[in-house]
Length: 144
Image (cartoon, rainbow, N blue to C red; front, side, top):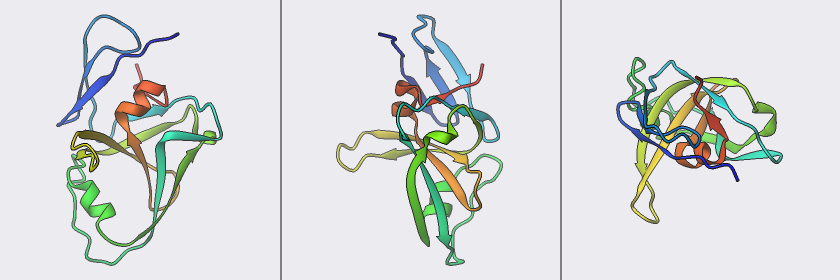
C-alpha cells in the first residue's frame, strides 16, 4: 500500500511536511498564481474537489486582494447563487492556477479546514479543494 504523508497548509501559502512517503521534511511555498495538478480520479467524479459556478451576482460583493488572494472566500461566496458539483474525472492530470487559500473552521468539529481555490476553466467558476483530503488521496499534486 502506497503511503502519503500530509502536508499542512499555513498562511501565507506555505506548505510543510513530507511529500509522497519521503522521510525528509519539505517546505514549499505556494502563492497566488502558482499551479497545482489535479491528480487521477478513480471514479466518475473527484471526492475532495468541487466545481462552483456563480450564476448570479448581487453587485455588493466585497473585494479581495487579487495579488495575494486574501479575502477570496468572502468575495466569491458571500452573496449570489451557485451551481456546485463534484469535479468530473475529465479534469484529471490538468494544471490549474491557485487564486486563493483559506483556513476555515469545520462546523462539526471546530478543527481547521485547509481550502485552496483554483481558477476554473468555465466563466465565473472556481475549483474548491479540500487540500488535506485531496492531497492524501492523490486527487491534487504539487508540481515538482
